[in-house]
Each structure stands twice: as structure tokens, then as C-alpha cells.
Image 1 (spheres, rainbow, N blue to C red):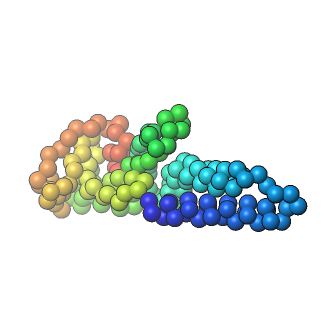
Image 2: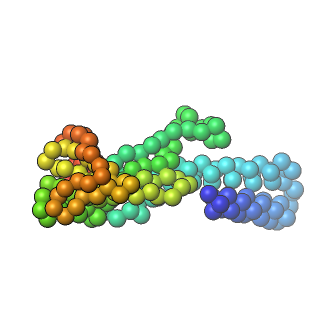
Image 3: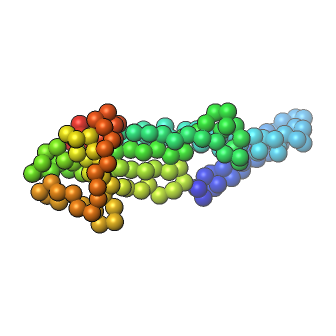
Length: 173
């Protein structure tokens, strides 16, 4: 988030420099309101562009093996335009290249689900899937899928064979 503030300030300084140079190079003085309007307008325009292009820029940088499972859009009081035009601020993804299949039970897979937030740390949640039964288990707090295909420390939750997360994990890797 600090980088966004620094970049926004740099955009404002650039707008100042452009208007300052234009004012000194022109034969007639520019209106006094132009300087603050140019600085403020450029900073707001940059901020809006940065918010709305964040998800597309991040998605473009992801490897082809990463599948976006869900996008979370919404608005906020400090960016009122986002109520009319919601902005993506987080998403859930799964990397098919990181899927590990059980040797003893090929219908069981384990992988990490990525929880990506605009200004937060990316969180990796280890998850096991039973591709045949259509079930999922979060491998947190010491839970694990042992090599013989046994689930320890967690319980299977039925999600159905049409679940996007289950399909991404079971059809990849």
C-alpha cells in the first residue's frame, strides 16, 4: 500500500512539473486553478486506474497452471465510484502444477489454495481432495493426508463433483 501512496505522490509531482513548465513556456499565464486541478485530477485518475487494473495485472503475471476460482468484488467509502463499478480486491486461485496425487489412492490429491488480497499477504491453505467422492478437507492445524491415503486430523466435507475447486485440483497436475 505504501508503494501506491508513493507512486500517487510521484504522479502528482509530475503533473506539477508539467503545469509549471507549461506556465513558464507559454506567452500568457495559465489560470491559477489549473495547477491544483491538474495535480489532484492526475492523482485521482492514477488511483482509479491502479485499483481497476490490479486484478488484470496480477492475473497476467500468474503462470498458466494457476486457475482463478473466484473473484471478490465490492466498493468502499473512500472510493465511492466503486459502488457503481465494483473493483476486484481479492481472489481465490489454485496452482495445478502444485497438485500432489497419492500413490496409494490416485483419487486423492493435495495442493494449496491461494487466497490473494490486494494489500495483504497471499495465504496458502493446504487442502486435500477426494476426486471420486467429491469431497474436500482443509489440512490445517496439523491435519495431513498420509502417503497411504488416510486423512488424519481433519474430516471430509462433501462439495460435489461439480465444485470448481475440486475440478481444478483433480483435472490438473
